[in-house]
Image (cartoon, rainbow, N blue to C red; front, side, top):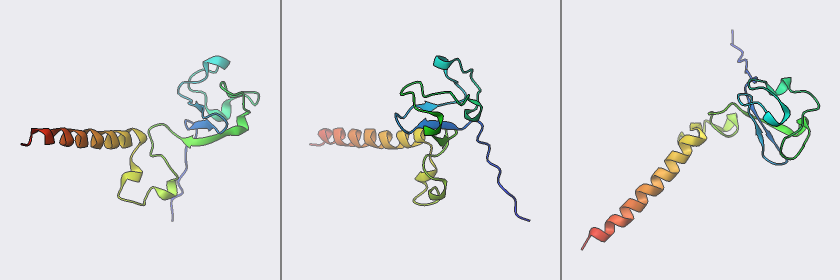
Length: 111
């Protein structure tokens, strides 16, 4: 028998396609008195984006915080960097830039 994967979307973040605001259930929405821990599906139908007042249907599921960014079907391609979280990608990119800068500056020590 094959196992079916059940995805828990209760704590997924949702991004407004109009302005880029991200609703995070762990934080809630202080401007509309939505307590922390309220899932996006549990928001009232009259809830609007606190930034641009877009309707609830203008939001798109972007997954839980701290997961790899991108489409899940594309995460297996490449050299493994597709499975890094956005924070890990930032460390990799800016760490490589800093290392390159240090190598460049070290060339001044040569005579």
